[in-house]
Image 1 (cartoon, rainbow, N blue to C red):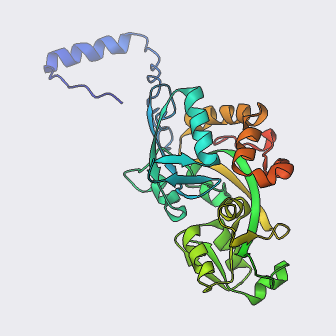
Image 2 (tube, rainbow, N blue to C red):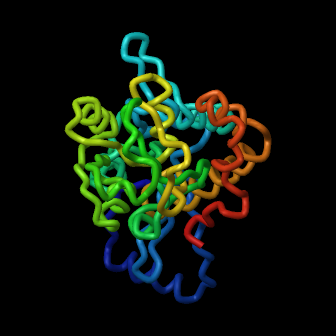
Image 3 (cartoon, rainbow, N blue to C red):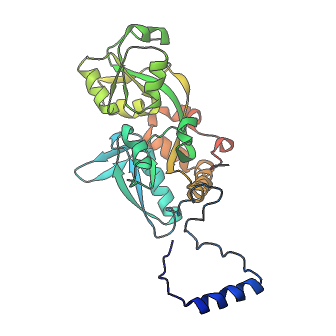
Length: 298
């Protein structure tokens, strides 16, 4: 929104201006320049200026410790995982320059809610929920999966959901997975990250880690001392979306149109198999339907 200086007018000049205005036909209000917030109506906050546009420097919140989804190799400073592949794909198509901000699972919501905003968007295994949609917008989903369980490779006590009643689980703070375990009244320890839960698992202070199954598969693929129980899933589907500040309708619609192309054009399958090769035969179970995409505030 631009700001201009004001100039003093004499009383006589002001009266002449008012008189002329009363005799003329009012011009329609001009549309705001592209990318600028619209005026508030009926007390609603203005729409956010677009952050995903050609030549924009767009700050994206990403995970660093979840292979397959979002990981950072510190030495060469290279990023990998499905979320980072999607960011690169979108930036090539739209033309924005991504600037990365590392976030933990617990930091995803504050990054989009606390002023000043830390990021313009969050790509971080961020599940779309009705509760979250009251506070922020989402484009997507671009991945779906259910909650799973990871154990030590030699663990043989857990095979069914009923077995979870007899063990101690760990889940990351601020996750829908933690809420699911608490709702089921299971014995659960919460940690700041999945990685810390895995350290607890290896140290035998907990018996299993439970969160989104894709996160567990990505991590277990890098560590033979861990395994995911393939047939043990529960809870509702987790729909991963791109988190945006509230009233980001223009960005949401643009990203959603590109996600449709991403899912239909073959790139989704390429990136999924690249990041989760062990799930290639079951890829369709994790692929969203075009008809299930968010309607961006509609």
